[in-house]
Amino acid sequence: MAQNKAQLLEDLRNNTIGNCTRCKLHATRSTIVFGEGNPEASVMFIGEGPGKDEDAQGRPFVGKAGQLLTAVIEKGMKLKRSDVYIANVVKCRPTVNLELKRDRPPDDEEVAACGPFLKKQIEIINPRVIVTLGNPSTKFLVNPKEGITKVHGVWHLYNNIPVMPTFHPSYILRNGGDTSPLKRLMWEDIKKVIAYLHGEITFEAIFGKSGVTLDISINVAGAEKRDDEVQGSLF
Picture (tube, rainbow, N blue to C red):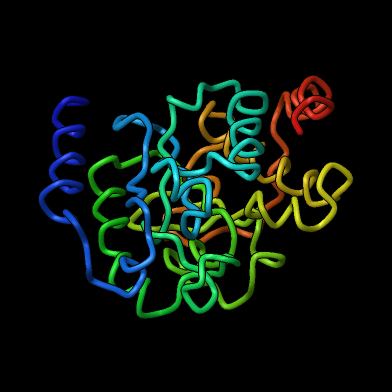
């Protein structure tokens, strides 16, 4: 099955996307940043788009924000980065005025052109949980009425897959870095993902039979121990 998923992803990259010119971002990119990780991943992390380092290397989340995400995965979740799958809403670097000086969120035209490829990746991988990083990916998948500061930590659904919105690592770095209180909030969000993956909280407990998020406080066994053991070294 894993080989088949890998082949499907390869076909999506090489034959469907190809040398894409579907939006204006192709004119300034160095590489298409398709995504990487385990085709059989239980967890999929989704950001908004590649930055300078990602554009240069052709890999998602390899700059400073990527180092933070890798710490969350490896130190916090006790997984290898290669165990999860990481992708973005758009696969070419969006910059202000296409000048390659300052990154920006992808615009509606770019999302419309590239977003279907992400949806196909999700369909192929079919993860148990999706973690959206920041506003653009959260809006693209679940379109909440409020921004990430309000909806982080609240379960949503995308095609019957639980989605946990949390802060983009670069947002944390821009807002205090090592001293940012956002780190704690992100960790609280990630602990809910860990609890779900470990079976400490069930799909039905979160969404009920109707598929609508229930208004409950999720306090799972071992959460405090997990916090004590990991938080000090997580970031």
